[in-house]
View (cartoon, rainbow, N blue to C red):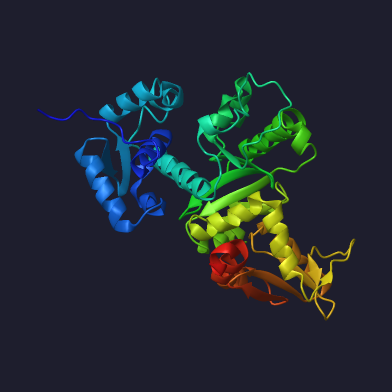
Length: 380
């Protein structure tokens, strides 16, 4: 007699993987490596979950992803209908899965961001955070579960207003003490920006979040942008001004004063934590300001400090693309020289991006993470 199929305990990696797959619709197998646990453990776990018919691998057009089995969907809905009904019932995109490559790529890119947010400590599950985008929300509210990431399907819960942002390439919105960020994921290749849809999304968030729903906390705040990429090489493509890449004007033409580029890996997760936490961000800036003079208000070059020669210094470790471009352009126009400070893994690409008037200094990422971000681990 066969043993009835049961769900794993909700504090296990198996259950986490089932949850992420349910929310994503199709979870890219490449992202399993980024979840907690050793490689061999996760490999054995996947084998066991396939054997017990909780998940299955869907492979087509060189895209490999994990999907829930019908049995797993039924068990999740039986155990926690309030959690999983929005994803596993009706015509939800995550329930009625398609095989077309563009649709699957969209699901994979949204899942990549979900993993990054989860690993960076953001609340990603709807049952753990305030329903900021609920049409029934009575503003203003003061969310306590921050940072919180709301994927695009949650954002569209706004109701009829969501029709205005149809076509946006955003994967979701991150709300943190450090600000409100529209999030994108370009993956390993360039994506085509939907300029008008993105501007409508920004305007909608400015009105709904900054002026209404979260006005007590974010009134007057500027909406920022984050774009994830598979490697630092994508930063060069996004900031390139070559004729065949001019469609990237969306990033650099001032739509977002602050538009950060992060890699979809552990280093991107760490920098994301800095963006979410003004305290950690300020701590790093304070360390970088040692042996530098304070910045000069009203200077025609955007900067964070002044070096011993009186030249401007820009802290660029979050790869704020418009800010880097403004710095580089101002130095060129005014015939000045300046210094840009970044992490060591960012330096090669930023050298290609910036002109000859920019000197680049780098921070050792591993030393920073070990001695600044997690000093308690260093001392044990």
